[in-house]
Amino acid sequence: MSAQAPVPPRSSALQSAMRFVLPVIVFAAGLLAWELVVRIKEIPPYVLPAPSIIVLTLIKDWAVLSQSLATTLLTTLEGFVAASIGGIALALVFNQSKWLEYSLFPYAVVLQVTPVIAIAPLLLIYLEQQTAVVVCAFIVAFFPVLSNTTLGLNSVDRNLAGLFQLYGASPQQALRYLKLPAALPYILGGLRIAGGLSLIGAVVAEIAAGTAGAGSGLAYRIAESGYRLNIPRMFAALLLLSLAGIVIYGVLALVSHLVLRRWHESALGKEN
Amino acid sequence: MVESRTSPAVEASLTALAVSLRGVTKVYDNGVMALGPFDLAVRKGEFISLLGPSGCGKSTVLRLIAELSAPSSGTVRLARHEGEVLPGHGIGFVFQEPTLMPWTNVRENVRLPLKLAGVPKAEGRARADAALASVGLADFAGAFPRELSGGMKMRVSLARALVTDPDILLMDEPFAALDEITRFRLNNDLLALWRSLRKTVVFVTHSVFESVYLSQRVVVMTARPGRIQADIRIETVEPRGEEFRTSAAYSDYCRRVSAALAPSYSGQSTL
Image 1 (cartoon, each protein chain N blue to C red):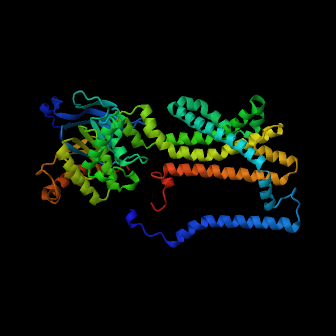
Image 2: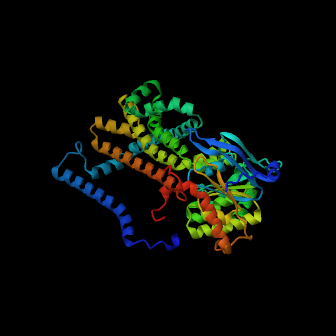
Image 3: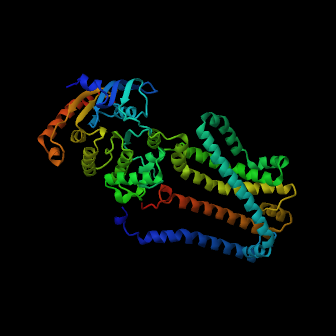
């Protein structure tokens, strides 16, 4: 096995370095081209701000923007936690009772396929604003958790299930020691998708709420800055949103990797 | 060659029998008759092999004995020792694949039957380590299944089947996926374990050679629905070793078992 694994060829080290270097080069080249075009063509900042102006705005407006970032992140987190707990719990319920699954699953699908931007205004009528925003994040994010967990719980090795039956495992034991660990890679995959989606849900709901004249999240800042033709701040807020999305994805991917690294194929290197 | 020998003295007293199947049939939900009617009596401490073509119901017999599946008709009886309380602990099952939980280490895999029965953790670990030592894997308790070779995974699976100290060991083509050298070694280790522990073993295999080498009795089954084609007693000097594998008697037994198997593959093909 590992004892006779060949020394990794130089090209593979180069390749993994290039995976990081190349996107950075593309990014830097894009920024440079953007900056040059804006300066040479003398495009005014209210049409297209140069990257340097966006960064300056980010620093100048940090007090406002960081406040908004915190609001949006809190909404995202609440929606994500609700979606994770709700999705996993519902999948467990479905797994225990086929009848409940048949009865309820179609509605989960309906909730999923109806665009949240269309539901948000309705939720804002019936719910308190902060609640409505979290509910939006929840609606968008919970379905991947539900469907992935369901898939995972149904993917238990048939022989292992037979083994648990042979040794007289109770349903609770089978769930705790067999089904949940077997479903874990799927659940983590669902959570990874849900993280990004809850941010999207939060943003969509904030924009819907923002048009109603209240709110203080990043998406609201974007909408507000748009009305005020404060385009650099719009870009700065957008930049923060993207960064937040990347960090959320990165954190969840890292958690998934740490949990699965000792046993699951997805977390193992190709050479194993 | 067909043996319908019913020695009443043996059949009558269940104390001498570990497993008894009478008139057992199994019809699957799709109407396919997989087995039977099938009769089988296994004495306590006996090592028997079930041999037959694919789909003849060998695995079904094991699943019936393990009560993983219920017979469509007939009775399956197991001798259980007095006061047995822990479910499934009279039986150890080794599947065709190692069937290990990839998310936990070797010791926890072996400890599973004890954990499910509520045996305290410290005792369970000690017993798991002892079972691992008995299959020669004492040093691998902390390893994860993916870090082991195919033969080692099978040994873990065997240790898990032995950890409850069962009376009956059911093995469903356990070594079929292994290379021949590994298989020979595991065959010898299994025989050594059987000699020292005196379990009743019902061993399902595709291999004529393996069945003759390992067992005291080879039960040859017909193509589906599986019935008994022949029941051949293998008698030789114990303990068996390489000299048996290379002896004339061994080849002779292999020839007889192959001959009993012949109707299953020389007749009109159902494939």
